[in-house]
Image (cartoon, rainbow, N blue to C red; front, side, top):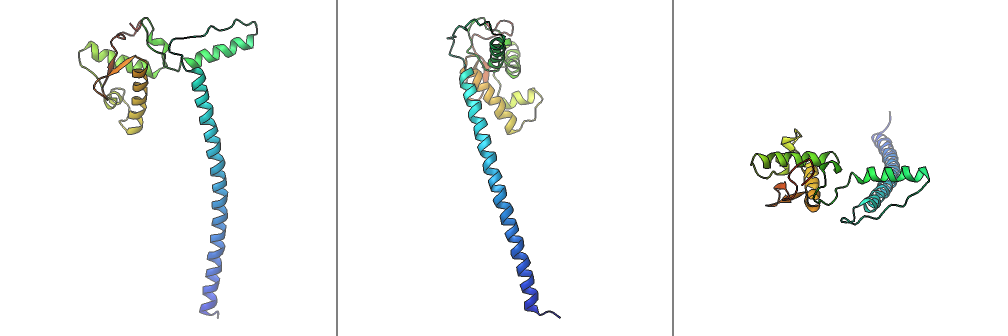
Length: 176
């Protein structure tokens, strides 16, 4: 019959082996985590660089070179499509169709409110009107888009947190 001390030593040895195994696993996970974070940061940097390249120049546009190479034409077409996801600075005659999907939806909701004389909307009210779950993530995503539209002259924010169409952008057809 084993002694009590012997049993305790066996349990201690088993626990020590388990701790050592878990430490090795934790070290492996830490290494994988560091690699994943590095990859994530590299993608974030790449996205910011692309955003910078595709950002509008406040109305100043460079004329594209005419090229005979069809690959260059494909690249330019892709860049134009990607630039459409950006919010251009509003100017008279600029159609809502230049905006990506979510932005005209916001503008339409606010145009309907203005047409009915109902006044500005908060982002929570927009989320509810769009049938979204009114949770912080959804509301903040809408707020980000609305703030971008304010910064580009499509919307006005008076008072803070309440959005309405800017003075010039009253209709979906031509943006004027």
